[in-house]
Image (cartoon, rainbow, N blue to C red; front, side, top):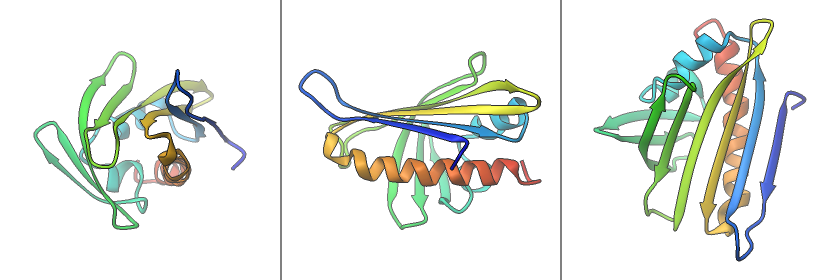
Length: 148
């Protein structure tokens, strides 16, 4: 994917695994932000096909992925001024998991989305990296479609 950059930083005793995805989207930053901030509509507005269902239970987003996995994500914050959404997974198979996605104006009617995840155990980094790669591909396809 030419418009996507990724970095995986392996765990060492002084740091945790960090995965960063960055992608250019042929849609306005305003439309990209409108979809990202709609935290209960991942499956229809942001990553259709990668996520097949999203339910909100208070501040928790229950996400069902195409592969059948389900994650309970605590929405930590929605920052309108920075166009940033942050969430965490508490427990489940992680010792620590936090993630944030942010929309930037890339000029010429394009948006740049940066998605960063920090996690422990670092042994989960490869699987999460693969999932995030699939997620940004679905994000690009969904946001560039007429339905954004």
